[in-house]
Image 1 (cartoon, rainbow, N blue to C red):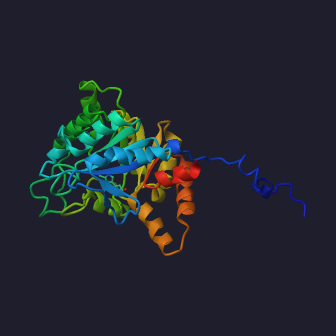
Image 2 (cartoon, rainbow, N blue to C red):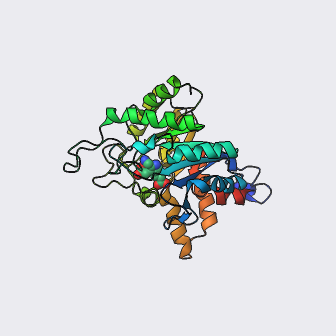
Image 3 (cartoon, rainbow, N blue to C red):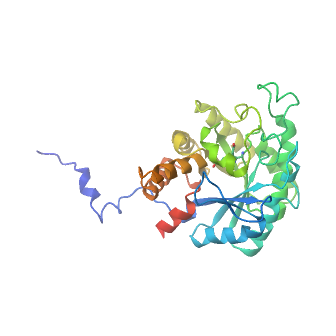
Length: 327
Ligand code: PBG
């Protein structure tokens, strides 16, 4: 035996930490929070253990719980008291996200980021205005350009309520430019846009759609969200969002798309966010309930992998648990 290279030398306790290439920190994490205008009390989300829909009155208390763990940023999703064809409660001054944002920013130090989309606010559950014939013809869904005006209004209404960053998730072509223009004209040129640049049409969103009541009533999202088969297309989507002024580029879901995170990392210097989605969370919970996996260990390993692939920030339902473990 005569090998000079013995990688195991560096794996002993005390040394392995010194040579660790990737670190995870509570300041990398964003915790999603669901605010529900249809309920007067906190309601557990069955498929997302540990997460709840909270009424507006509880939103500050909920965010304080997040802050106590060391996580400083939240992503707000709203469940409105009523839905209509155009999702008008999404940009209402007294809408659920606007109201919660005002209270949270007034009463806490949390960084409030808001999801800008229509699917929770429209009767049909699609992320925009749908074509008249859409229910009968599966090839027709969202009217792209008509939807841009609405997204612009939503983003401005969130900024007016005090949101520190907006995150458009509807995969509408031109959405970043429309929102940037709207924010700038309204005097919010310092509010950044975290764009869901490469958002895939993924089956991993299942639990979220229960949580936020945003499943499409007919058809699916294949006509606007990306085909899981495509990687080059993701680079094109990212390029367009960069041209339109995106500040942070998001990939969603995270674990099945780490190659996309890495591809973007290699080409762009923008901060990259990855959304470790509801299905990625539910899956580990289900396996750990069966006693098949250790929840905290697999969660930590998942988030570390997402960072190793090149993400700077991670949206995750594990944010609070992991931050507590890291502390
Ligand atoms: C809304 C939106 C969705 C998610 C975030 N924003 C659902 C969807 O596109 O169907 C999913 C998040 C998750 O699964 O955790 N457009």
